[in-house]
Amino acid sequence: MPFCDNSGGFNDIQTKVNEFSDQKILYRKETDSDSLHRQKQLSLRDKKSTLKAPVFTSFSEGSMTVEAAFVIPLFLFAVLSLFYLFEVMAVQTNIRAGMQYAGKRYAEQAYFNPFVSTEELEQKIQEEVRAERLDQSCVKGGASGIDCSDSYVDLMNQILYLNTSYTLEIPVPVFGVFDVQKEEQIRIKGWCGYESAFPVSAEQKIVYVTETGVVYHRDYHCPYLDLSIHMVLSSGLEDLRNESGGKYYPCEKCGNRETGMGVYVTDYGNRYHTSLSCSGLKRKIYAVPLSETAGKGACSKCGG
Image (cartoon, rainbow, N blue to C red; front, side, top):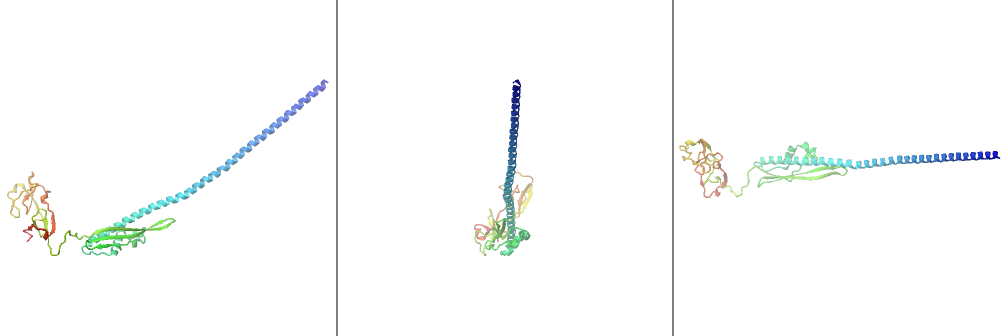
């Protein structure tokens, strides 16, 4: 009986040991399966991250490429427009300088030849600007594109109205070439005197008068008009006489001032001056018709 009990207890112990071993194996299997599952999840997460990264990079590179495709042509177009703006300004400045040169050449010859041809004006402009410069510019037709056909001369006043027209070719990428019409205008007075404010007939004589003079002069170089100023010693004024035999008296404007050794006198004047800049030593001479000298007598030297 005790033997049976012992064998029964041994069997129970052996059964419990086997159950514990089975549970341990089952736990190991479960543990291994969980770790394997986690590894799969981590590997899938890594795969997703590696798949997403290339897609994001390719999208960024694509957007930058599209922006560059728009920005670079716009930048080049702005630079090209700036260059053509400078060229247009340079062409306008050169052509106006050529017009000034052509007008000056006309003014020099207007007294002898009041007429001028448009071909001559165009030639003078090309001569000043240089035909090679115009041929290489944006002027349509180069040097031959300068047109002065609208220019004319006012023969009454000897004034040249110089009108120059030309066309600028402005190339615009994609859109083509645009033509811009330009026109420059200047007026040049011929060097042949001025038009009198009052009518003067051919029979009337021109005489010369001064602001304070009481006579008129027929000769512009009359000794009374052409002052000959001399410096003399102030100590000898009492014995000095002018060309008419008259004495010299102090000038009302500067004669009473203190002076050094010398004073200024003229050949036909009757005043001495202590200052060379005195207004009494200056003459304003006016050319007027003889009919406008009412009340004035003729000069004793040149009025006869």
